[in-house]
Amino acid sequence: MQGLLDGSRIAVFHDDSGALAAPTAASAVAVYVRGEGDWSEGKRHSFSLTQGAGLSELREQMQTLAANLGDCRIVVGAEDHGAPYGVLDKMGFYICMMDRFEAEALEGVRKGVLAAVQQATRPQCGMLPTSRPREIAPGRFFLDMCEAKLTDPLFTARESILVFVETAPFEQLQIKCDHEPRWLPSFALVTGLEMEKEELESGLMLVTVRQPADRNADALLGQKWFDGTGCSCG
Image 1 (cartoon, rainbow, N blue to C red):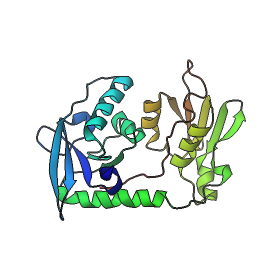
Image 2 (image 1 turned 180 degrees about the vertical axis):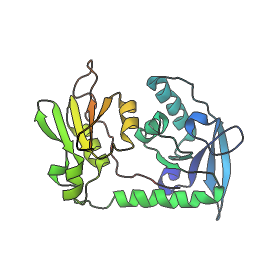
Image 3 (image 1 turned 60 degrees about the vertical axis):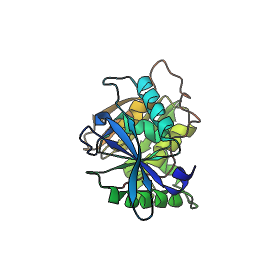
Image 4 (image 1 turned 60 degrees about the horizontal axis):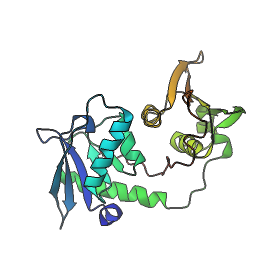
């Protein structure tokens, strides 16, 4: 698993012109290999997502891509907050979004990912229990992000919400916030959760995430959603 452990291989989405592309606009994925002080293209794979594909087909296409990439687990592409990156994130990929592609920038991507992995392995004190969703009725939970940000210096919405989804059966989770977490719509799409937003008189927002009517409260229980290794390269 050398490509995963030392970041020696990085996959990049390209369009027909060879420019950096988001997964939805890509026609190929090139794997770049780290050499003696530089990066060079190794193998190139044809890649094209089916327009209008459902989540199941999208997962199958991403699984095919993962098989082609082997132990390469770092991907670079243009900005896109749709489902493809969410699926790749769930599959264990480290995703870096950039404005344009230059092979020279891959060393910075590599260092950023390795630093994130190293940070995630350090002991964490963890957030306060009050910064996690609390049950207000059977199967119904509430998280006040505004209060958590004020009282808990270690609070992050991603950790609070995703660890909750991993460990607690729930029918509905309501989140009071000044703005919705930008990753939440993609996560809801990938997991099949229903999501709606309501503006409160205070100017804050109430985001409601719920299980579909035909799904059990423990449908997502035990699956790994939070890994603490976000990458913000580029």
